Each structure stands twice: as C-alpha cells, then as structure tokens.
Amino acid sequence: METFRIRMLADGRIAQQTVEGASAAEVRARFAVQGIAVLEIRRDARFGRRGRAPKFALALFLQELSTLLDAGLVLIEALEALRDKADAGKAAKHVIDRILAVMVEGQPLSKALAQQPDVFPPLLVATVESSEGSGQLPVALKRYQQYEVRIEQIRKRVMGALIYPAVVIGVGVAILLFMAFFVIPRFAVVFESLTTLPATAQAMLWWATLLRENGMAVGAAVAASFVGAALAVRSAAVKRAAQRLMWRAPKVRDVCALFALTRFYRTVGLLIAGGTPVIAALELSGKTLPEHFRARLAAALTELRAGRPVAGVLAAHALTTSVAERLLRVGEQSGDLGGMCEHIAQFHDGALDRSIEMLSKVFEPVLMLAVGATVGAVVLLLYMPIFELAGSIG
Image (cartoon, rainbow, N blue to C red; front, top):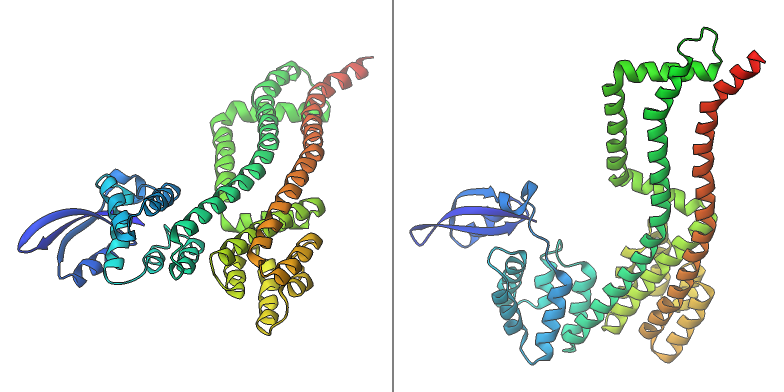
C-alpha cells in the first residue's frame, strides 16, 4: 500500500487530498467511480522512500476496538471514534475510512477487512466472520489478540536462541578480518628481505603485496561480498534453501516440526472456538504450515470430507504427535475439539522450549570450538614460517 497526494476537480473546485492505494491507477479508478476527476497524482515523499505509508498498528486497533465494543458502543460508532482519534494523514485514519466506506454500503466488518489484505491477515478476517453471526465480536477480537501474543512469544524464543550463535559468528568473522587486513601484512614485512621462503611465508607476502597495491579494490570487494550476502539472505530462494537444509538436520528438523505443529494447532483452536467449521478451520490453518506439510494436509482434508475422524486422519498423515492424537480423540468425543487444539498447542509450547534449550546447549559449545579452531589455525599459519625458518637455520 502506497500513499499518494492528488489534485482533483470536485464540485467545480480544485482540491488536494492525501490517500492510500495499491497503485496510482487504482486510486484514479476509485475516484472516477465517484465522479471525481483526478488532475494530478504523485507519491507522497513524506511517508518515506518509495512512498511507503506508515505502518498500521493492528494490535492497538484491535485492542481499542474491543474495549469500545465492551463499553457498549455499536460497531460503526466505535470505528468512527477510532477514526476521529487518529491524526490526519496517518495510516490508521485512511484504513478505518476504507472500512467505514464498505460498511456504509451494507457489508459486514469481515468483508471490509478482507478488502485490505495488506493490513488485515486472512486469519483475522476468518475469526471476525465466524463471530458476526453469534454477536461475539469483542470476544473474537480478544481471542485473536491472545493468539498473536502467544505466536510472538514463540517467535521471540526461537530468535533469542539464535542471538548467541550470531554474536559468536560475528566476532569470529571480525577477528579474521582484523588479522587478514592488519596482522598478516605486518608479519609479512619480516620476510621481505629473505630470498628463500617457505610456502606459507610466500602466501603472506603475496597477500601483503596485494593489499599494498590494490587495498581499496580488495576492501571494496570484501564489502560488496558482505552486502551481497546480506541481500541474498533476504531473497526467497536463499530462504527456501535454508529451510530445506534445516529440515534435513535430524534434531533441528524435530524442532522445526514442533514449531510448525504448535502454530498450526493454535490457529485451528482459535478458528474452531470462534465458530468456524472444523474442515474450514483446518484448511485455513494449513497456510501456516511448511510446503511439504501442506501436501499432507491436502490429502488429509480429502479423507475428512469423506467423513473420517479427525484424529485418525491427521495421525495417518503425520500431522500429529502421539500426545496430540490422544487429545484430538478426547476432543472429538467430548465435542470440544477447539479447546483440545489449544491444549495441544500449550503442551507443545513446553516441549518446544525444552528442545530449543537442548539444541542451544549442544550447538553453542560446538560453535565456540569451531570459531576458536578457525582463529587458532590462522594464528598457527602466521607463525609457521618462523618455525620453518628456525628449523632450516638449526
């Protein structure tokens, strides 16, 4: 979504306005439907590079909306109050204006949210839609907020486990760069006056000469390689390759599967508790699964539509753990499948914490040894020519 400033002809007068839209053509078409001629349209540079609009605070919006609904305001009044509270030109005002414009035409809130998929995720739309018939919108909004909080907690635990390895690797790379650009050239000076040199000393002299004659080019090449690596890490192809690599590592694969299933069952529980039918909840929740899990779920959904029990089908397609399968059977028998899915997610939360802690305890010492061995090998290579020369003199 981008922000545009437009000059338009309305009621015989020229006016200016700031609006949001997917593209300039979409904004122009929107005003044309209202019978307004757009004279000029351009991206608003005040909202950052590439016309990027300020981020919409979804969590705050949901919290304030549920609070106003609990206080007794009807939905339209609550939305108007939030719109009036927002500053002019802010993302919140434009987003809520578009919601109200759709609802004034007689559409429900879920339809209004669905027309802004870049702001409101499909899961939220489905949660709101399932609550509209029962009149439990405030409850559904709070349930979705709790869901997002729990997912974010899991994400932070996983990212927190990666911070220490990232710091160790970063320090190791910094040490190696320092030795390559400052220590090795100074060591090489010792050997410049000698005629007969071992291979390691010759390599050091070559590197020192290269830096002396083409230091700027070498530095630029190293910087470009780091920039290229940073850009590559963000690319979809590299992310897919990294995910495939993670799914091949035995212990890491187990943690990834546990994380995926935890998020999947928490999403299923949220939707079923809000009134979404089981198959529809499973189908929508499947979007949170990795690609190879989605293929299993698609096959499972085919069997579920034929009337087979949920627990048995999901277990047959490796979409449960042993504990999850038992809890699903209990949920089917008691009629509380949504609640049992939430219990499954909570149980897996604990298992995920233990798995992450175990992997950290194993991986961190190994990483320290690897970085230390690499730095030690470089130091040894620095002193090797001296040892070789001393041996030849002796």
